[in-house]
Length: 96
Image 1 (cartoon, rainbow, N blue to C red):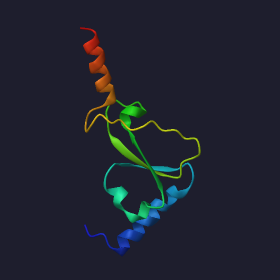
Image 2: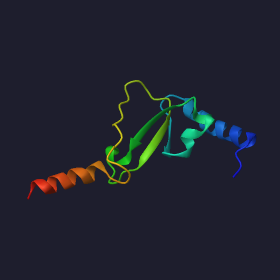
Image 3: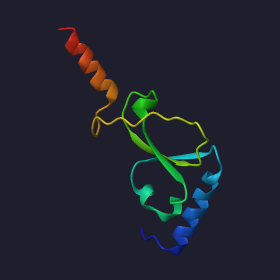
């Protein structure tokens, strides 16, 4: 796909709605962070496992975050390794 001026402006219009405080866009970590159309938005990266899900998936959140919103630090155990899996393995090792 070619990414020209027409696509740029369509993209910018799509992302402008997230410039309102308290509205976010979630996007799997990757290509969106390279686009100029979201450069004006704050980006925070989270992982699903730190938000209560059973799997690790790094995700960028884009928008204007309200003051005092504390998000958990992303899981840092490597690609595809969830902090919950590491904790389970550690607990299993203690039971020996």
